[in-house]
Length: 78
Image (cartoon, rainbow, N blue to C red; front, side, top):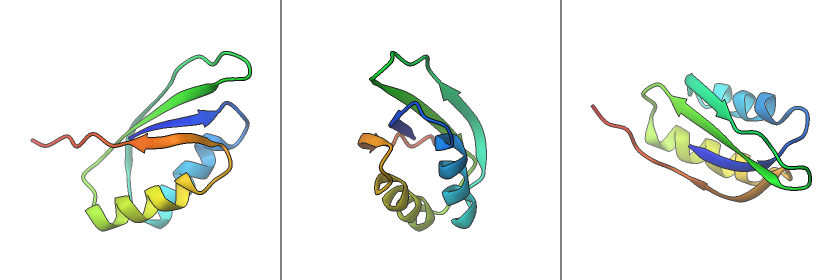
C-alpha cells in the first residue's frame, strides 16, 4: 500500500491504529525523505490480510486530512 501523506507527527501511528482495528498486520514500512511543503510516500507491506478488512481500512485512512492522493494498492501473491 503506497500512501501519499503530509510529513507530520502521528501519521504512521494513525495508519497503524486503523490497520490494527481491521486485523491487518504490518510486515514493513518505508518512508521516503520529504521536501518541505510536499507530500511524502509512505509504503506499507502487510502480512496476508482479508480483502474486506483492507478495503475498510483504506476507506478510513483516505478520509484522514493528512492523505494527499488516492492510495495505490499492489497485491503480492505467492
